[in-house]
Amino acid sequence: MTGYEEKMQKAIDALANEYATIRAGRANPHILDKLKVEYYGTPTNIQGVANVSVPEARTLMITPWEPSMVKEIEKAILASDLGVTPNNDGKSVVINFPELTEERRKELAKDIKKKGEEAKVVVRNARRDANDAAKKQNKAGEISEDELAGEEEDIQKATDKFVSEIDKMVETKTKEILTV
Image (cartoon, rainbow, N blue to C red; front, top):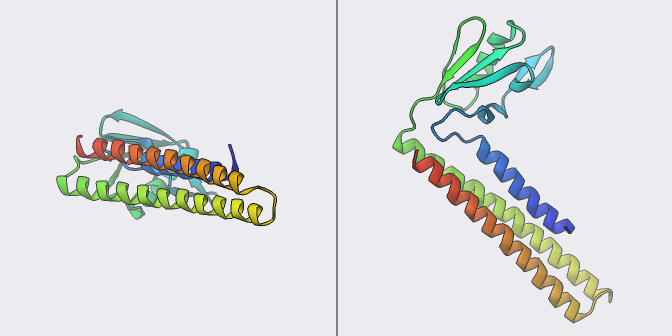
């Protein structure tokens, strides 16, 4: 895999990670991935200080290894943009996810499409950089006009492949959100 293809693949990977944090009406421990809690003065992922389980389809249970972390975890969830209210029984934090409203589903679908477009921009920027590099090689006499044309064709094929993959990811995630 060439350098520009690696950049394109990273855009796909980042999009997949981003989509993992979007909930589709079911409880998904990955929505906590971006949240940090203060643990002995160090910002730490919730999964680094607690066990996260899914006892029911729309419930997350966070059981910290140290009971003193319950308040910190609760604070982090309240400060986040998850739109949920945590309940705490002193030993663990429980998050119940409400059924998604039609309006919220449409909002999430828009967000999914926007994130997909951002990933496509990254892929197209990688294409531009790769084409510029090939043209510089041609100007410097390192590759011929025919090799330049072949290189540009390969770059375009890779771009089309990655853009198509992004479109499939957007479509799949949108369907998941709208048909729960």
